[in-house]
Length: 453
Ligand code: PHE
Image (cartoon, rainbow, N blue to C red; front, side, top):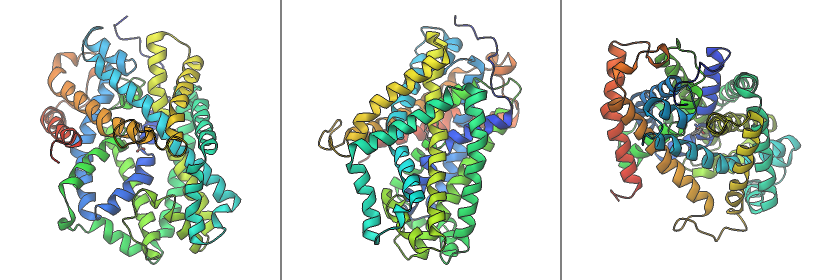
């Protein structure tokens, strides 16, 4: 049955959709990764390039993904089959996205599990005992323990399954409506605290006064790659979430709001983290350990540090959860739509399989540290590279090629396949997905493949 389904029951409201899609976009990428790469690339100028990438490349591809899903009314693979025929090679783009979402869930849940562990550490006060060395050593203790990593990873996936099993309205939308306002509230609280701290001004300057001498070709490429990851593009999320949208929804307007909120969270999180780091006079380019090793030490020295640490790690856990939900939903929608399974069975199956695949990722921090999948990379690092550096950009590239070159105006017949604005906005969008986005993403992919090094 490769004709569009009857409109499926979807989001209860557009606001609910915005929260769920923003929940997918806002994740470890915003709170953990963006601050540390901004630190490494020297602040302002990098931020500016990143903003341009979001606006000129990420946003048009998000519109394209939502459009494909809403027109196809199916999962990420099925939508391409509806639009192009069951045997069309375009369905492989769907396959790549579902695979990306599945593998991503398996290793994302390991890192997300750390945030659960740190919530407990903060709540029980363990995070505030001992000297700075002991506190940053807690991170190494956690990753060295295989049973603890697997336990937290299991708990995280179980929570994700518990939400997705409730369906679009009763699970994903309902929980996004609780978790996302919670996340914004917690973030604003931390942000205000950060801005009034001694490092507040300095962190504003670092983020918004560009110093173009700090820009390298690597920073341009990192900005582009991250713009992709942070908007959850190339993993079928926006296709799947778009398939539950009503035909009248304005995809330009919705995408703009999602990208804006996602960017806002990344900015606020970075400003907050930098203000803490500057206040303590620590180096800003601390790399991936910034959030789990450096921040807890700094929280310890701040007034209300115990509460702030708890709030921060809760924030991280919420953000990770609403992203993981969307990854699981990509897989679940596929199993429901294409295999005809019921949601409960599909969700348990998808979650269980991602958990099993995640175990080697967790073990690659300890027992299996010596096992390399790709040259010089542990299982975790190999999965991360496969998904973040190849599958997501490749998915995005194909979606933009599809939207720019294959998608024709004739197809814009049913309301669900139409973009609200067919004038200037449409023309700009079409130009971007046809020329700029494919060219830029291709550049990143070739660079990742080592062509320029
Ligand atoms: N956008 C999420 C983040 O920033 C990651 C993600 C990528 C989620 C792709 C779903 C799909 O953490």
